[in-house]
Amino acid sequence: MTPTGTATLLIDAPRERVREVLLDPLSLPVWNSAFLSLTGPAAATLAAEYRVTVRPGLKGTFAYEAMDPGLVRMVWQVPGFAETGDWQLSAEGERTLVRHDFTHSGPLAAMLRQAYQGVAGIRLGRLQEVLRGRRGRPPFLPDPPP
Image 1 (cartoon, rainbow, N blue to C red):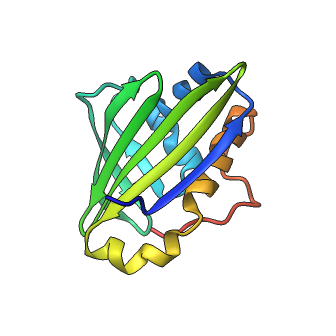
Image 2 (tube, rainbow, N blue to C red):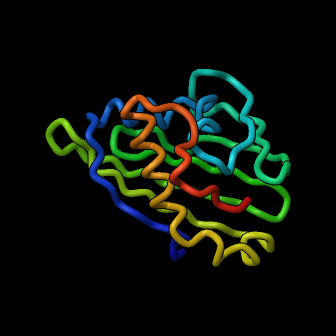
């Protein structure tokens, strides 16, 4: 399936540190503005299922499907909308080349397809800001739609 969005960024942090942030499920709403809340176990495992609330208040589930050194795959769904997101991590010395792809499905996803242009790059920028020690949603990055 063709990705809905894709972007690549060289991040000034080691691969393991990038992976740690991606595998901190309860902190995802801090930098991924699609998520209003995420509840479940603090330690990420492939067996854990989380309750997620996304903009504009839709409730569903979130889970990890891969937690390899070079790939973190996250899946979430709410009524009418599902996302599979891949984060491919390649060590480049002390930095990490991160490629983020996501694929959407469902009737709500079809209606919002245009609104998600550029979102992969926004997510990478926010991930980079968290790794730089800045918490929260940077004001210079717009919030994507639900």
